Length: 324
Image 1: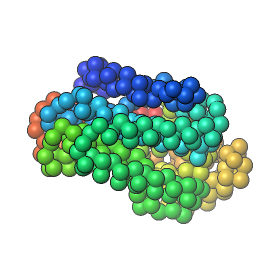
Image 2: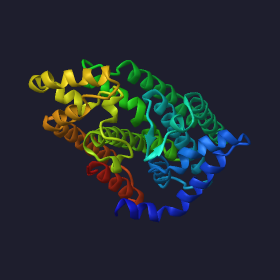
Image 3: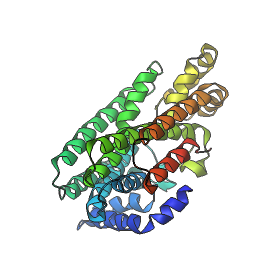
Image 4: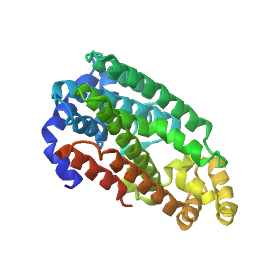
């Protein structure tokens, strides 16, 4: 099944979640409503709600319960995007002006805080303490991941291990608990919820590395922002780290990265992208994506052969084959 076919099949339940997101983000305060809904209306893959719903299929599927998990996790994701855009000084996201660009940094920070608070308020309707424990720990880890990214801006000597730990916290963890909490909310046993967590974690790692590759190799139309945005903002991603392991490449690439830093991205980006694309960094990052996808599919092996299992496998395959 193609990804678009899966979304079409889930259209009713995803529409319920979309309507709930809009209702939750609407405020009596006109400006908060406008800024919060600005990002929502820019669209998005809603991959976290999709994982919540599919994980719920392995237990007692109850949309009224699952939508609270799905909405809360998507809100946390959206709040992190608003905050990220301030940190990264990003003007566009998904082809639209960011909240910080359309308004200002202060409005954006409070908008992100408001969306975060709404996420916590939404999930208080669920009484299972395990859900709140898992979510709270993940939010702490996400904040650490954000701080680590700031610390490592333009740090070309960071290790691949540091990078992987950072994206685990920033991206993979929220996707992992989308699968885990969907299972828990549906009453699945611990083995099932842990297998789904492992699936989500490995898909999440592959997803972020794929995003890093898209930023380097995609077009502005594909990614909704100028290519090379990560390196302009100082975010040294996996393909760059791999490229820098080649001394010949590093000799040319390091001065370009320094030029990007010293000119706020006004110079050096085009040449840096050329050097990275010519290096082995792209192929090595793609190979690691494949390894994470294989681990994700392996995590599903013990789960019952229901349609949701094939759906999850198909999503993993789609992430593995994202093109640019």
